[in-house]
Image 1 (tube, rainbow, N blue to C red):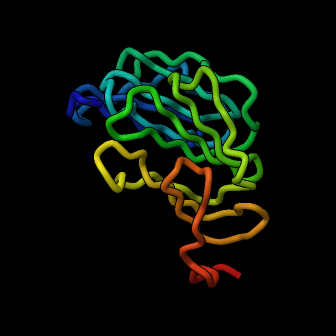
Image 2 (cartoon, rainbow, N blue to C red):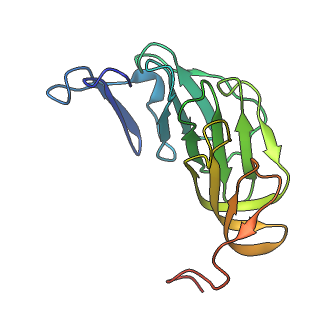
Length: 171
């Protein structure tokens, strides 16, 4: 949020919102219910827009997290990692353990799958290498049938394996 007092938190079956920096909290009714804990991200350009991936659906709030409505179609019904892009309005990325990596340029209404990615354990977006360049993608998962840690500087068209051995604790 661009308002430092507004904070949203997803905790398993519940989501909460504060407008006073945490002095008081209220439930976000449209994000309540049993299921997986939600992945939450703020739009990096529109401070009142938030996205939540929960229970196999993407929801969006345009009123600072007071209300959320479903916006996605045809995404995998599994836990996901949700990211938004710094400096880009309405760009949303979701990575799935078996469903690959998906990108939306319209605030989550439509998604395109990044065909080069088989599955995602973790991913994040890094600083672009130049001011007009896209963000660098970092991914731990499988690309083209190979497991590893990868980097892409071209929005997932090509990937470089940046950890030729398994990460510590894996294997």
